[in-house]
Amino acid sequence: MALPKLSYPTFEVTIPSTNKTIKMRPFLVREEKILLVAQQTEEPKEVVNAIKQVIVNCSIDQFNVEDLTTFDLEFLFIKLRARSVNSVIKLRYRDNEDNQSYDVECDLDQVEIVRTEGHTNIIQINDNMTMVMKYPRAELMQTLDPSMNESEIFFELLSSCIEEVIENGTHHDARNSTKEEVEEFIASLDVNTFQKIQEFFQTMPKIKHELKYTNSLGHERTVVLDNINDFFTLG
Image 1: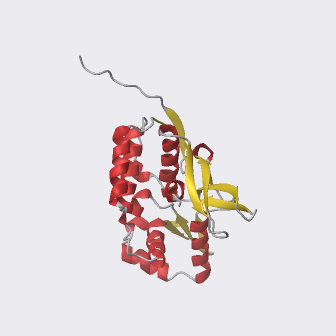
Image 2: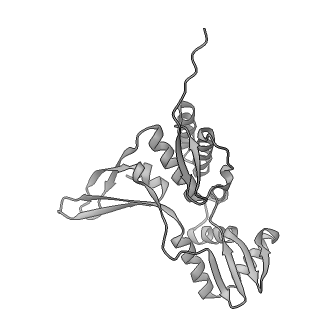
């Protein structure tokens, strides 16, 4: 007699960038294996690939995982991890004031996307020209060269996140331009516009959660978790 088929509860989660609600199931041993294999490689690209694959496997509703932004991917995985293993995770943090380690707990169910008031993806270049930005996609993070420095990574992100340029009502789709043409356009921007672009990235939606504890000196301290590595590898 064949072994019985198992059924699993589903839950709903909202994709932050689109506000679309989808149904998912908890991940199983097969997905846990995918994650463990990727972690053992210690390659960021492999870890991102594994997270994407787990999300696809566990999604009841169909959508294109390649369309997810970086913060979508992080948020969905955190909520999936909460439903699959335990919503409360224990982290160890070394305090830089007394140099002692502290165990802190984080409830993944309380982790949300933080949106900065006044944030906009419209960059005003001059009276006749505006630039429309889009959020970096999860797939972009897989194409970045690990040897790049922070400045090189920023410009790579910037060139990939220009959606269109509107000049006197005419829309110029960045997808119709070569990478060289986009880079030349970026190089021609004035400093004020470039600062607006930096603000766009600095204030874009992101996962963020704060944990508080009191150190041995009696001082209340705050640990800020704002990327997926913080939630699972903080030490």
